[in-house]
Image (tube, helix red, strand yellow):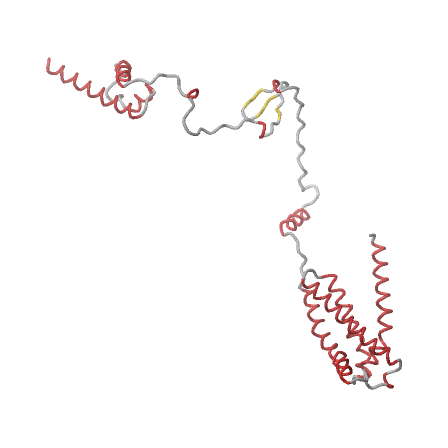
Length: 280
């Protein structure tokens, strides 16, 4: 709806409400005089009833949730009360000076007097409550979205980042045109090609026993074979160079075998040195 149409609609509503208020004016004023109000109080009495109806209507348009339902209940209650008092005035069909009771039947008259007298007190209570709810009402907004909007508003147009434009990728003729290079796939023309993560093979984690095909083809060496290789390898090594870690790396064996070879070779060299000393 355009702005002019909204203004026209609001103006029409104000006009209808104003005319309805004028029609109800005499009835409520005569009812106020009948229950003992003076001329000034009787003149202000229509504002108490119909004015609170207008306030409740505005509050219902602003508030949400339980507060809005409360405003609608106040609007409905005061509308019904104004209707009853206008109906009572219509039954008499004359000015307030010509009738002193709202109804001929005693209990009905007491109920109508209680209704007419309680409306000003209710206007004070309900009016204050509605105004307080409207003043403390905060529309529900997403704090993250609101903060993002505020940060964007603070930036000038040249400072705001522009969305990146993804580079155009060449079309692939076949899967054979791809060559894998690191984490990218290179096409036949040398341009990188994006590959979906779902299309790329994922490394399989080893679970359970190692498959026979994945095992090393190198035969397992016995301790005697390792010792023979170690003797040949360490002939030119000094005693200081004869360490378990160096033997393990040179023979590609386990740390336990490396320590075993070190101790055995050192013992052999010690025995050989002792034998030479005895001969001499």
